Length: 608
Image (tube, rainbow, N blue to C red; front, side):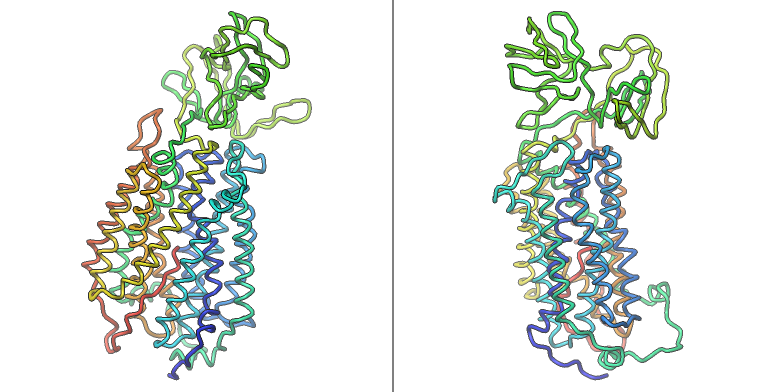
């Protein structure tokens, strides 16, 4: 096998520079997905389920890309064709995902659109990210791998920091950080636009600067013999023959990535409630008739009269001095609209301006659909349900649309006869007010906290190789991260959260460095790309398990009609990563029999 030639610093830089753009896309996704879905109306108990898609796509795409690129050669090379395809899809989807709430869809349709966009985005990010890690393995000799991985790690963290701070920086520059209910703020939307542009430029740079070795040269430098007709090992055979470190490190990976999935899912709401005093609001999730609940985002009377729209009860009108006035719009004190199109509006703080069946205070004048009420004392906003009497037909619908002439069209609907309206009540769920300034300030702040985590990871990564024992540094890093998670669960000062995320960054540094280092030191031959793709499943599978379990666990911890205690999910994450630290003891390091011990160079993972 020929020795790979030394490469200049800038050649090594060129091999990994595209990683910078891909990491910006990944950081924007990690920091903002829960915020986006919360904004468009997702229930907090369902948030973890949306996070099934990223690791699921990674588990499917990474091994396929690794195996196919090991056996691919075309005009653009072996790895770069997958970068081109993945980055192209990512750029398109990054312009669509944050607009999920801007297309005037119903909540269910907006969430479905967001789910599809998230699936495509994560698939494309996985496809674009894998080639850069493989290029270093393909073209860099053992002597320079330390420098090559250091460059890649720097670009990885630099891209993360840039992506994380985009929303808060755009807010500082004066861009609007609040939006109508159900719509994602401009700071987030434009962050994705700018991130997509940078990703595109980075990919173009990589295509211009990087020239992969043709198959014959690649085989000479990597000790691979041509297999024109030989039998190729399939994935199951490779797994059977995988070194023991593949499985022992995978056990540690399980508890670590389980914890970080909870971080990405619940950190924004935890910080918003604990440190930013975000107000809560009640969403109507259905109507209860005795012991039976009819759960739908849109509810109608007799197929035509909408009484609940997108989880909000509608106002039928107002009472003043005992007289009822049907209304679509109510204005108090001459200028303040508190009901618009039957919907109670929010004030500047994001709190409802009025409540149903509660007397309004400080009223000097009231206008109902443009008509002044003579005696505005004892004014109350009345909902439809409180004024229903006797039996009625209740229609549940996933989508309600109003066409020409005000005609109501419902889709995916079912109806039931309610015998007595007096037995009915709204079934409500208390959630954070995602349209409030406090929530959106918290969302931007969480991006800054993730940037602090990335910086802490960089600093701690410098210290990791200085430990005499790699396993000791691995364990210590994870225990520090566990402390950060516990601190995050209970800290109410937004500045002290920096400490929590620095500690979490210590765990992140070890998770990026040691697992792939330990594994690559035990791998040889022409299936390195495939093994690295398979090993990526040890980061994906625990995230899928956490995503499936998250909603169930949060439901067990929640009380009816109270805010879900998402901060407790951070405590569970801390316990999980502490268990991972203990599992480090089961790792037995070493290379394959007959091989010399590989150089102890921290490798960088793909973060998926």
